[in-house]
Every structure is written in structure tokens, then in C-alpha cells.
Amino acid sequence: MDLLIKGSTELNKMFAALQNTASGLRHDFGEVEALQHSLRGARDFVAKASARIEESILTDLQLVRPSAGLLTPNVSKTGDGRDEFVLALSGASNFVRGNAHFAISLALRSMGETKIALVYSPIEERLYYAEAGNGAFVFSAYHSERIRVSNLVEPEDLTIAYNTNGIRPVIKGNARETGCPAMDIAWVAAGKFDAFVSDSLDFAEIAAAELIIREAGGKIESDGIDIIATNGKVEL
Image (cartoon, rainbow, N blue to C red; front, side, top):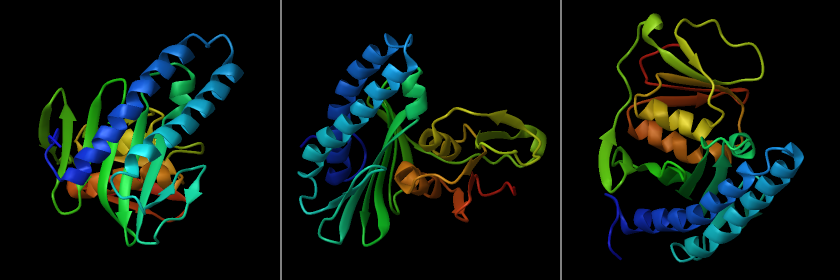
């Protein structure tokens, strides 16, 4: 196959699967925008759209590694016990409200370690991706470039993304709440944010972003209660 982005053939096949699924998701997004008079109806529609994502992309992913398992927030499919695809729609609450800031998160894990990671915005058509040991990149309009975390450390210079229901830590800086954790972490990797603080999340939603931020020079930690991703220089 012709390579679309810098990386392995498997990475490109996974990206092609995302693009195939994204075309239908863009149509669904147009439909949900017309349902804003009924929030319940929009939620039901998005739940069905999310299920279609899983069904659609699984068909393509089986061509990448036929014996791999699948993990999503709603589905766990046992495979060969070695390889597993981890898939989630991050920012579903934004999708429900006709907000375009949502992303498909897709990771390939082998023997418990993430090897390939993609976080893709189907509306913006922008992809953040990484392969273990090869750095992190952003791809848009057939242009790929490497990304790295920021170097900012002074509290007043920081921009910090939050995804918390409780009281925020008292940290100086500019606060952001976007509602799309996978993209928030990818933006820390790209230097758009300097840190991300969140309540505990389903692993499927952040599996890909974890590898992307580490390959960009940042770090991410979780104690089972909170998740903190930073540029590796900020102490929260």
C-alpha cells in the first residue's frame, strides 16, 4: 500500500481504518447537529454512532492483525492473548452537543505495551500519532511533522487543561476545559498545553495518548484516582 504518513505499514493501515470510519462519523455529526432540540435524542444517536464506530473499524483492523483482541469502553473481545487494539471515542459529550471537538483514540498493544498510537479528529482531519521508540508526530493535509512538549515552567506562563468534577488543585496559569481528554493529552505532547489534570478515565480513552506524550518527551502518571500529564518540567 502507499504510505500516507511517516511510519510503518501497520501504522498506515490503522490510519486508513480511522479515515474510513471517520467519513461515516462526519455524516453522523451533521445529523446530531440537527437534534439539538432534544438532548436525549442526541445522546441516543451518539451512543448508536459510537457502536457503529466499533463495528466499522473492527472490520478494517482485522486486516492489520487478524488474531488481535479488542478493548473499548463497552466491548472486550479476547484475541490471541498477545495483541490488542484499544479503541474509544473521546469527547463524546461534545459530540452530543454538536461540538466538533472530539476524537477517535486507537492504540495497538502487544504483550501489554502500546506500540502504535493514533488520536484523530475527524472534523478537523488532524492526526496525532506515535510508534514506540520513533517519536511523536502530527499529520494534517498530507504534511507530517514531529511534535515535542513545551519547555515552559513558570506558573504564570502555563496553560493547563482540566477534566475534573471536583475541586481543582490551586495552580497558577491559564485553565482550559475542552471535554476531550485524548486530545488534551495530545496537545500537551504538541506543546499547545503544558499539563493536563483529570479524574480517573477509562483506559481505552487514554491508551493512545499515553504513548504519544511519552514519545514527545513528556510524562503521564496515574494513581488510580487522578491522571496527570505534563511536559516533564512542570511539577503539579
